[in-house]
Image (cartoon, rainbow, N blue to C red; front, top):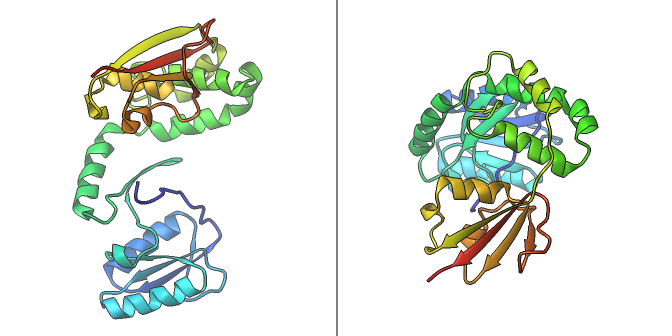
Length: 255
């Protein structure tokens, strides 16, 4: 990972924008959409955007802003930038941004176009309904593990809250989900790894890694495959007895 993806709250904050023409106007639309206040110069700005064609002029403005402690984006000049803007899909409060690290804006836009078609308009209302139900969820499912299992089941492919499916009444669907059970029975899955490429894993295997509660690794399994496991899953050297609640995945290397 060459850059750390982050989402910045700009509401009510100043953002420096230097430049003119369509590149600057495009950034202005994004800043305003996020609630930011556009200024030419400000000591207490949150970020700085430079939209200038001339490399030397853009570099000079970027250096001046950076000297004041600001992170800088120079439009279409990734080498001069501290952060990059991805191609954005807006299903607020769900935001998806695709970045190629400055390699190709056209590739990022092509990926955005394909992803746009996959994400229904109900995705934003679904996220808002889940957020609004946080207190009710916490009351009925008191532990973080309970809540994680509840939402993982409900949001899985084909499940009642599948985020890739269109939903007519998300509030009712979320209420029904919360009323259900989050209990976890012990389960054990062995995955035989014969290739260091995680692309060789099946979708079911990748899904199991993404939601496992416990991970056990036997042999020289490639780090790229281990990294596909849920980051806060317990990491053990051997399968425990008795088997803990939730899903235990065993990755075993087979040469």
